[in-house]
Length: 156
Length: 156
DNA sequence: TAGATAAGTTAGCCATGTCTAACTTTTGAA
DNA sequence: TTCAAAAGTTAGACATGGCTAACTTATCTA
Image 1: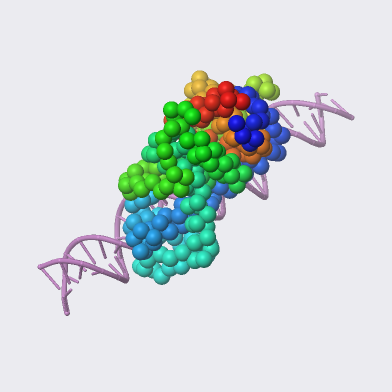
Image 2: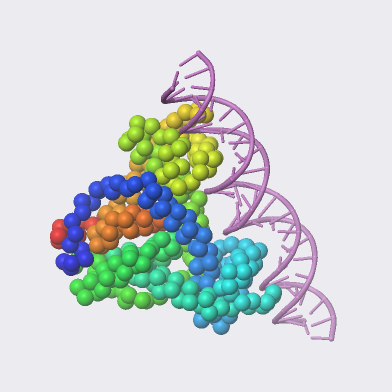
């Protein structure tokens, strides 16, 4: 049993929080929702460039399960946000900022998936849940996941 | 080392998935977002009824960090969805369906928070992250969290 | 109990992210 | 090399979930 895991907590203990703290928490969740689109897109674009050599709207639409016009609109939002570079009808490229964000997201995604797998969860579920969970994992929690991962590795 | 944790997985292994499977995953995330509002509201309403005897829009607005008109609009959506019962200008009550949903959400919330705490994460962060994470935790993952929780309890 | 204050609602605005229908551009094959 | 099919865009609609401003209802207190 490691130091990190040694604090005592009953499984169903309720944590009472000040209304402002709770409101801040919900604000954090709302903000996370606003950046989810951008994160998911740059992550996928990076993957497509790596595996296919380029990122095309039709591929993106297929992977996300949305229609092409949705992709067009969202890509133009990413362009406005300075995350992608792109000419109409051409493939999509990441800017430096986009590449950085993509890298951070892919790292976080891999950690969350690996952590879920280490709990014995099947791959399909781990991937699915990770897609939703990753956007709400703080740096602190991500580090805790990494730490737990190392534990489960060494104790394997 | 338990059975559940015994499968071998490298920490940064990438899981390749068919485009349809990935699309389904994102569809799941989008659906989760659509029910988040309802879940957060019934959860809070249940808490307020328990602690205050009644749930009032002004309290709900304060806890969520939103303005009263937002609460009015969302409550009427919950009413349309059959989750709350309510007369204008009066307190808000849960229907049987609302109460059931609230119970399930509160249970899931408690498990997620307890699990994060068991990883050594501080209470403030655990609560914050749980608020976002809980909506994306499948039954399978929730069970894995419970299992891990029991492990950490017994090995304390 | 009257009037001020607090609580709640309505109307109308905005951004996000989805869609369909119709159009344009690119591509690839005969 | 042309022209049909595939890819991409534009226009316009819709639901969600925020907001402010202005109004109505309820509550409390002097």
